[in-house]
Length: 349
Image (cartoon, rainbow, N blue to C red; front, side, top):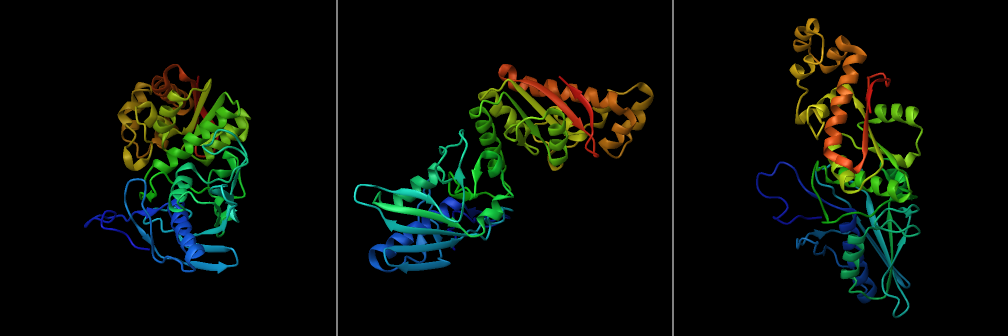
């Protein structure tokens, strides 16, 4: 697979890649050529929604009686994408005249089973933009498109698909066709789809957790359906902004002490590399005798050891106020502060 100069300008430290939707589109175009002419297009060039024209080399091709199959190895560039290196295969057969383009899930591609996603239940998990791209390269002919991903069922276990109601494999994704390395866009999109599914199922209480330990603590406390729990990671701002536009009755935010301290101090991205906890601000929440050692502490957790549950509760309340101000009246916010052992040490709301 090759890149055009538009994607790899000189001096760029990280290389961009291609979505599963772009790979499936290229495979569909090559399979169409083989079905119509007997010869696969290789390399195969497509046009992405933004006008870019990458070319892809085939990794698999089979031409049989009434079908053509082409496969592309997904290259996610320098992004740590779970589907990097996966083989995306499109099997193309003819539909009856007038039937148009239909989409089907092959091995490793999931089926949608819950409402709230861009594709309705009962359909293969091939998102709208990849469908549009494939229809374009198939020139809206009469074709049945079956998309498969090698080892996709196993890879899907590392994604949100199970909670979103996508069973049996991966989703074929992409709105631009391009994977931007270490972009938060994909994670935030998953958070948004999680909110959509929860709302579509009629859930009125959702939980955003910063990690597995916090989520397990929230699960033990709240006992909500699995669809209510959103792995927001460090992207609390992305969750709060989406909730403001797509209200729920109640939002619980669960996270470690340091991350909730950062939220209380106004941070909307809680990653350690994008801002530190303000120890001086934490010290103000403590009795006078503890403020000097707090300011000299090495970690936020050390300060928690000084202040104990009273400090954790104060941090929870600050975090709650910050989050509540962001969502306004779209949701009632409460906060759980979790220690490293997985215990709830502070809460507010």
